[in-house]
Amino acid sequence: MKQSQISPDILEAYGLGEPTSVSMLESGHINGTFLVETPSQKLLFQRMNRFVFPHPQNIMKNIVAVTEFLRKKVTAKGGDPDREVLTIVNDRSGSSFYQDKEGEFWRCMLYIEDTTCEAVGQAALLREAGRAFGEFQNMLSDYPADTLFEIIPNFHNTPERYRQLEAAIEKNFSNRIEQCAAELAFAAARKADCSLLVRLQEKGVLPTRVTHNDTKLSNILFDQKTGKAVCVIDLDTVMPGLSAFDFGDSIRAAASTAEEDERDLSKVNFDLSLFEAYSEGFLSTAGKSLTKKELEVLPDGARLMTFEVGIRFLADYLNGDVYFRTAYPEHNLVRAKNQFKLVHELEENDQSMRDIIERLMQNI
Ligand code: GN1
Ligand code: MG
Image 1 (cartoon, rainbow, N blue to C red):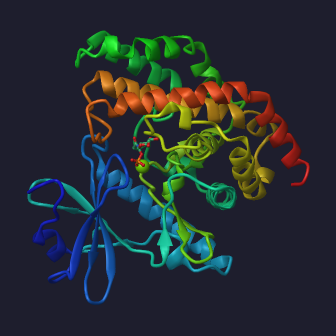
Image 2: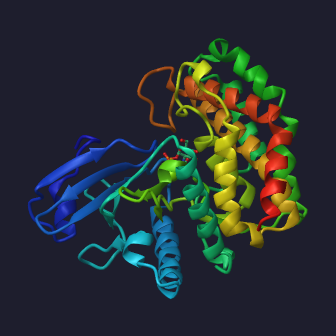
């Protein structure tokens, strides 16, 4: 079966007959996502990437537990859990995932109508995104973190990510080191910075929380008519983590003036007004529950998360593009250059970011 297809046995496992349409959605670098329409419903099927996620069963246990917890919170607030929380659809045997004949793991979710995802934002959208991710973190603040599986160990351990880059340099599997000499020098100059937040976490200065860990703008569904954030999606990496990294990953992805694979670096800029809009939304829902130290390191989270994703793209480029889905040979290098341009601008705007957070916190 081709990677871009969904076979009839999968649909049958979910008790579905002949669909009226099936389309592959191109968003995301990791899983394969399909929209399946039948006369009575719209469903999303996802093939979970077995290379990235060797234990899909554990992901589904995490997601089922977390979404059930969130449904109760949303219901208690008077919200609509079918719209504001992802709904996992079980297969006919009652399982939250299905393994097909080829050994691939699939899951099925309800499609949430009249919503859209955005990759790059405007201020109003970012305020909403910040509010939604802040609220997500808030709702999970009393979730017992130690009951969750750590889906990808060391996922946001920046010094460990740096060691992975060093291993990729050492191997030089794809023989591409010369093409990225400037980027490797940029990374090397920031090696010491990598440990900043992880060290504070190890010392207990920063608390470990239940975090989303992939907070890009496209992981929120917005209401098509009102522009309000409806639902946080892509819960694959919900696990214990740092608030600064969830905040930082959003800034990386959404306070840039271009998408993360824009080649023309003159179009890639850090936009302080977008940073302010996101921060305003985020602090309005998460601000009160964050410690003074957590607030203080939010700008560090933005810089380090951007750097971390940059070195992951670079390592994957050196490893021969085995992790992130690429559309052309230099795609990962383009992404790394793009992220490093942003790191540079985040460094230059460090004080301005701190001033904004401090000012916004005065009204919380
Ligand atoms: C991947 O799920 P997706 O494709 O949105 C990656 C994130 C990166 C992101 C960069 C499990 O996210 O960590 O920040 O690409 N997810 C995983 O766009 O590695
Ligand atoms: Mg993801």
